[in-house]
View 1 (tube, rainbow, N blue to C red):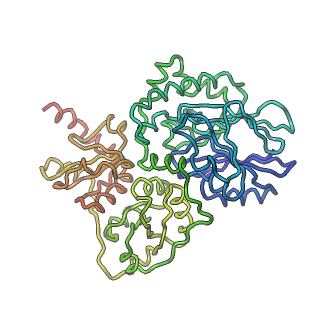
View 2: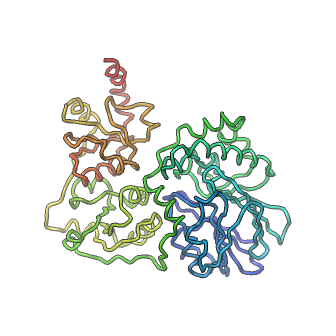
Length: 471
């Protein structure tokens, strides 16, 4: 049996390539959309991808299931969860597919997959017990998708907080509790292979270790330790969940209704800065924040090519917009992959940072300040402090009278902000505030970026909160 866990750091996503070396067949579990990476790995191991499966309808990236189905691969998809959570693009199609339910079994060569319905994170969520039939008739591990992570379980609130189904989170948490209790009956030696690791927004406390065991999770996971009763578990699992990125709701719909088939990655053309500014579309500047703030094209967004690139682009950009990039040649393919993974396909052109530096026209800038300067300014009637940290962070300590909107939800909450005041935008370190400042400047707000450490403000000025609130 061949087993390969494939990790995407930016979305903290695990896909799996599992192959039967006796027959040369392989399956991809929870594939991303740029499926060429899986074909390259399979070819290196003399395997042929003949099947693919999703554990659920994903919310944080565009699934590669349709891409593989379009290449003639047999795909397996959940038929659980009720009428609202079906793979609409698959049902009745000409693709080679099988809808699967609790108790179903399918095989890839000598490797057997037993289907378990594990609802809670989503209604249609399934997990796969994996048995290497060439060695034993007992399973060696379980592919849990977004049901069980290392140190956590999948959040049950997304249908409400991301997809807008009011009142859905508490019933989902109760379903998750039932799934957790059934998980407790599995053999403790089973390896646990999740679909996400630390950094994913699909849970609140995911571990960085890539795999675990059933026994270890039952003993040490806070989520399982809270499962002494339904009430205690529901309260624990719903408390402190971070605000989901704005694009999560769109991803659920895209994966349910069917993403467009890429075939190959988009190939944006290199353009002059002048032609790029004359194009009718969105410019995403991938440079570091300091360079962007010192001078950028008017109306462009900041999304550095580092770890948060696709989350920021997904939360701030419209999927129907044409996209143009400021990016180095060597980072272009990485950016294209990141964008299509969150459903931003219309990548038309790019120019390099060096081309921007050599441009002979004026650029737009955003002033950077520290927390000392913010303190001097914030009591002015024409100033409003905006805190773009998570609500849980804000609750632990905040600037008096600041508005709190998480940076990944900001594009949908602009109406809450005063247009007649200058916004002083801060977070914990300045990084998230830089993304938000770029968005706000694009939307016509007057902005100053607080590029400083919030711990310094708390040490110097934290006592002001209780004093001013008490007035």
